[in-house]
Length: 585
Image (tube, rainbow, N blue to C red; front, side, top):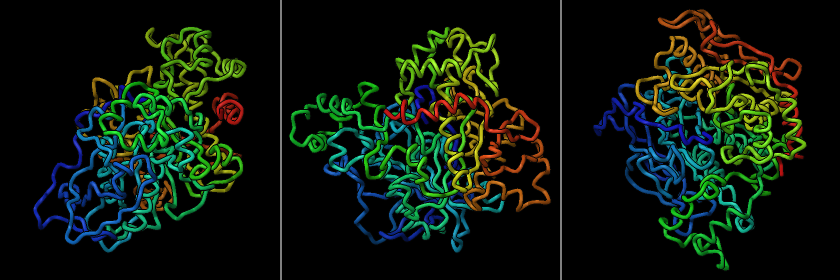
């Protein structure tokens, strides 16, 4: 998840309740290098294998190097009963992880019990966090609930979640890094984990030919980067992708900005070394970690770059040339993505304009400052609507002027930042897939969980609890104070969560988010014991002549409806057309 200083995970109850640890209940699998003993949950009737290494530890001389395959083997089962430490990162998420380490390249496999002789489809989850925070141990990303739902609807699947290096540890930038071939290490970690799955998932009852890579925010951007990796080369690592609030296109500079690398070098005394990267490798962890953890320039400014290898060109240019791995996708964004990225105190058009051309300290690095001439064009296509300050249609959820702490034109500003970072690239991605004849199922999430201020509305990250099925009691910590996202909400929220989960599962299993309806054609429409009818419309593939999104909305009778994906058309066309001349600088 991007920029979550106030988005904190606290105390969510999760699937580790109801676990038996007796030797007789320990599931064991034999993989390429040896065997692992996991744990069995009677409550969920699932087997979990946690903290499995997929690479050699990236420590000492392997720090800042392309990840290496495991080489050791062993006799007798090793324990796989606990999540590994989180990769070292910086931000609100990291505060609540009990263990951080450089030695963090581990993954988890969660499977429904009793399917050992089956070959189940695999959902391969990559967390978000702006490439500078996040971890597989985050309770909000627990996969056991959606795996449980997959069994309930007769479409069992396996879940895999991974850690990958983040911040400077995974995305060190600079000419020396580029020249050494050690760029985009976090993406290379992910790709090695995918290779591990190809080699080993069959031992868990999975089907290596039916892997869907799945992520949100930076995780969704990672999915997109793998789709265009090596000029769209199909290495048979996955057959489909799910991208929530992110994708192959992000409008931020994808060049290695030397100043951040030089700042880090000078802060630790490596700036005069002949081999600067090797100097960084020799530093004690505590020294290097303290140096990184000083300013946002050293904690948050590291991200994927065009390196001429893994990422050969700007993703927007690759897609324009029809160069990508032609796999089916789900891709979407939330209605109010920009409300946590927009500057505050945007009271006048002059305030809005100044933020655009100066890139205020509140806006993240990927919301690049823009030339004055382009900023003037932005003002025209994001007009101030009297009494509202919201460019439409569709109007954003909170249809009044925001509170003074946000500013009278905050909603106008947040619409632009949400479009520039997420929505316009999402629309362009859908159009590219449609023009290539590749299935793309596109969505807009339009539901506001409990605990979210009305001005923030259906913002970034809010769909996670719905898709992941994390509806149980316990503070999920979207905002402070933490509030369970479904607390006090009508039954339609639970029903929407179930429908979204069924759609995601169906895509992983059948490459069709509608197949849960087709499988149970006689009763899929019937009301549940509490919720409304699940008579959501058939989710169509995106088409250029009729570009339709499905809108997930717990406040409508059917939980979802279809809309033509043309809203704020002039504005988003301006953003997408400026990829090469404004944003790719």
